[in-house]
Image (cartoon, rainbow, N blue to C red; front, side, top):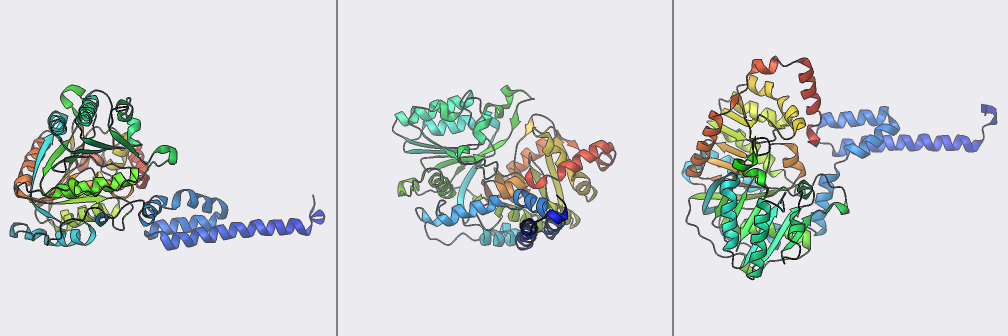
Length: 483
């Protein structure tokens, strides 16, 4: 067809297509300007949208829009997720003042009060439990002694081996008349050859999936929390899933994962109960605010503890900001253990700034990561941190799965969150903020023992990496927002 044979309809069709392409480009560029907080990200998407009118807008629609936070906020606004105060209300009381010993961390406490719904509770006791060899017997003993209720939330809960022992104990508790409720993340369940859901079938245990995958391919928005509550009086939380690889002595170096879990007693257990019941409402629609789940608690301990439940359905990135606040408040030293260390630019800046202020910062990371791509992205940040005086050590196998932050031998942050974007922005996590010098001393002893057996990474080693390895690590780092 020549230009002479074209009709007015053809011209109109072309104009409509060009107009639609232009509208899509303008829409994508405008949306990026309005919603992208990072100006560098906004500039990239605006440039792509305007220079590639069709492809740029399509890429932005597929990859640029943060549907994760939007969907999570929608759940909260629609009432699908309860607010913290909507369950059985906590006793109205003035939170305890920060003791004089911890006044150097006063600004961290102000930050926490402003962004976290929960408050500090005094008189708590925490017991570190090393690996499955210590954690699982203590958890099973508590389950076997339960008389009223058992609430369990785990990202991964295998139904065989050590998981099978839990299955039997939970089923036996039901036969004694104990109400047992279990939440297992639907994505985390895919790690299990024998699922807890299958193993508990017919046992009377009420087990629910968090975000079943048949409702949508939710790779993010996962419930990464680990929490066991027995009779509302004792809790277990930390970094351990329920699976045999945490039993280091029997799993073997190639498959084992070393970790710390914690037994918690005292008033903060009531807040942990509310956090579980919020999740239970989300997965079941059942609102459980019976006072029986919230007994009066006084463990007589010395720890001042705050429960911090974080997730993308809230306004603040609580855990990320608290870590940043801790780094800016620290005066002497900061010690960090995490299996997945993928700091973004602000976190790198906070770490370097603290180190340049004279704070001694030590990072212990796994020498062999179970996710190689994550390890590559992590190592891309090593050189800048080491160059500015931060010590980075790699712990030899078994895989180090411990999540731990210690500040000035006084304050500890423990729980399920890693130091990465997925924990800070994409998943639902649970951590405890702990003011207790004695507890910090116990964790420091553990840190010292691990550090003594770990390998110190040098700046020379980072600089002498082959070019191909540097390129590989740098390329992996580009995907930091998605890892």
